[in-house]
Amino acid sequence: MIYNYYCRRGRNLMTLLPLLMSVIVSPSFAAAAAAAQQQQEQQAQLFNNNKESTTTTTDHHLRSHNEAAAADQDVVGEEEKGNVNSIPSWDELDQRPLAPWYDEAKFGIFLHWGVFSVPALCSEWFGVYWKDKFGPCPNIGTIMNETERPNFAYQEFAPRFQAELFNASEWSRVFAQAGAQYVVLTSKHHDGFCMWDSAESVPTTWQWNVMDVGPRRDLLGELASAIKAVNSPYHNKNPLKFGVYHSLYEWFNPLFLQDKKNNFTTDHFVTMKTMAELVDLVEKYQPELIWSDGEWEASSDYWQSRKFLDWYSTKVKTGVWNDRWGSDTLCKHGGFFTCADRYDPGHLLPQKWENAMTIDKSSWGFNRESPYENYLSTKELIHTLVETVAYNGNLLLNVGPSADGTLNPIFVDRLNGIGKWLSVNGQAIFGTTPWHVCQNEDTTNATTTGTGTTTGGVYYTRTENKLFVHLTQWPTGSTVRLACPQATKKTEITFLGYGNDDQQQPQPNPVSATTLKFSHSDDDDDDDSIVVQLPQLTPDLIPCDHSWVLEMTNIANLDDGTLAQS
Image (tube, rainbow, N blue to C red):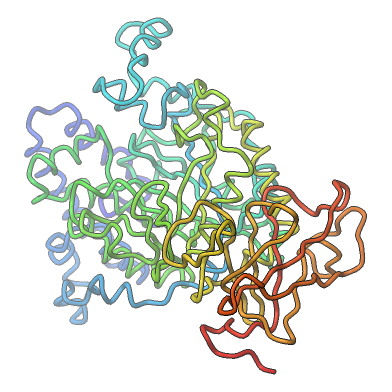
């Protein structure tokens, strides 16, 4: 348990309550801010002498630089003088190696779940769309007027958020069977509602967290434990990784609105809430991924992002983070880039990136109004996964659970379909790297387009000594011409799932391992492409649907032009 720098255990709620009320109801925020500063200085003196070193480090991440220096001068010591200069730059943070597990994982599950799941209308932005009367769903006001009493407030949805059917073990089983290697849950979205046991350790979340209102269960804690306890059936048989999404800003928080009014020359919101929440999440649950969001209105200096990430990297050695830590960081700084929602660069990027996208094309949270046509098909999702991995990305696929804690069957269907495909072709996804010679080509005309988007056809991934050829379309006549690989006399081509002894799971009606026949193209003397004859497969023998993978060994240009050993 960490200590919030405003209070001691056993005294936190009562000592902070007057301050919270003054912030909420006082016409003068300046008085509340002054009270906050006076209170923190008094309480810091009460427990400075018995802080442990970890708590001292934590406290520094919960205060502005000036406040920390004033309150802790007697315990920090000489090494903390000039603390600002000890904070690494973004360039220094970016040079730290990305934990290998993340690059190997390739596929994760995103979960947008919270109070917005109760109305389940339009999207997870329901609260601000309804309040400010803007956005893509103009019918929200009409629906609310017809179904709720006059003057109904968004906050009144919280008691209805019960999660009474939530089963963390069942969720983790579904995600593992889907082939996901990591799971990221919204710990707090832009409405500020906290999905974990934050009430005592972060008093500024009082009456707006899962322990004080609604389910009265630590939903995030339950899921974190369940995810870490389940093993992937497809990749290395290791436990899944758990991560948290966290919104830096909040739509309606008066502390944030006052800092914004002050042009972010004050940081009351950051020191009293944002950093306290992040530190509490790390201390309690040790997430191996922090997916930050809501960064765009202020710089990373205001959010104290570099200081926090420096501390986080020492607390969770295998931790990774994204690029949403301030208005100056998106697609510029971070362990991996997200750049935009549903990001798809369409070509190879040298920087590790992630495509965070939704099964429901219209919403991240569960939307009761979404028609069937809004949900991407299993085929579309598998093709997106293949393309993303070929271009050096990870796919973080979003599911919007219901307020009662259930997963809509259409989400489970899509996840099961991906898992079934990965059970055959997982070795061509997990732990692979892009093939720098060529990432994709259009089999219609066999033109190499390694730096641009094509209309479909072939994508490539590789391991140390294998090249995987992903066929997202079954070719006419069951022959496929490949322009990128250069065959040798020792080249062998097999079809994953078709008689392969090392397939991920046993397939029905297995046949003996078969090496496919291929020949050099006769179209042009200068054409080095090869023509591969695919097996004639009946429905009971075809190993999977939607996309098929060939495995090639002993090709001449696997290592970027370096000849394979003869």
